[in-house]
Image (tube, rainbow, N blue to C red; front, side):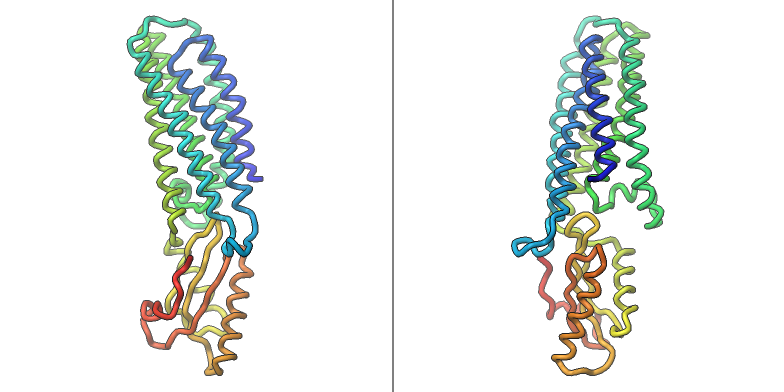
Length: 312
C-alpha cells in the first residue's frame, strides 16, 4: 500500500476528530469548515487506497492493458467528494453564519487544535513532498510541475489536499483571530467561505487532471524522447519512425512504434525480430504493451501511421 496515502489517512482522522470537537465547543464557522475539510479528506483517502489497490491488478483477457486507469476513476470520486463535502459545505455554512450574532469565546481551544492540526498535516505533507521532489529531480522539473503532470493520481491528490489543508488552517486561524480582535463573527464566516473556495479550486484541478488521463494522455515530450532513444539503442534497430506512447495507469504506458531494422531479412524473420524487440521493451516495468511494425527508410514518421492500428 502507498505509504504516502497511509500517512495522510492517519493524520486526517486525528485532525478531523480534533477539529470537530473544537467546532462543537467554539461554534466557530471556520472550525466547522475545517472539520468538514478534514472529514472530506479522510473519506477521500479511502477512495485513494481503493484506487491504488485496484490499479495494481494484473492484465487479463478482458483488460489486456491492465487496470491502471481505475486509479483515475477512484481518484475522480475522491476529487468530487472533496468538492461536495468540503467546498460546498464550507461555503454554504459560511454564508449562513454571515449574519450570526457573537458566538462562543473559546478561542484558545480553536488555536490549540489548529496548531496541532498544522503539525499533523505538515507531517503528511512532508511525506508527499519528498515523494514528489524525487520525481521532480529525476525529471528536472519543479515540484509543482511534477505534482500536476505525474501519472500517479493518488500522489497528486495527497500533495494537493495536504497543501490545501495547511493553507486552510492559516485562513481559519486568521478568521478566528480577526473575530477575537474585532468581536465580529463576520470574519470567522468569511474564513469558512474562503476555505470552501480553496477546496473548490483544488477539487477542480484534481478533477481536470484525472479527466485528462482517463480519456487518454500522451507522455510528456521528454519521456517520448527517452523512449525513442531507448528503442534506437537496440542493436537490431536502425531508426524509429512513428512513435506513440500513452499512459494506461500510474507509471504505466502503452507503446506503438514503427522501426527500421538493421539488415534485409525475410518477412518471417522480420516478424520474429519485431516480436523479440516488443518482448524486450515489455520487460521494462513501465511498459504494459509494445507494438512494433516496420517502417520504410527515408519516410517521415507520420507516413507510417497507415500501417498501425490505433491504441485502445
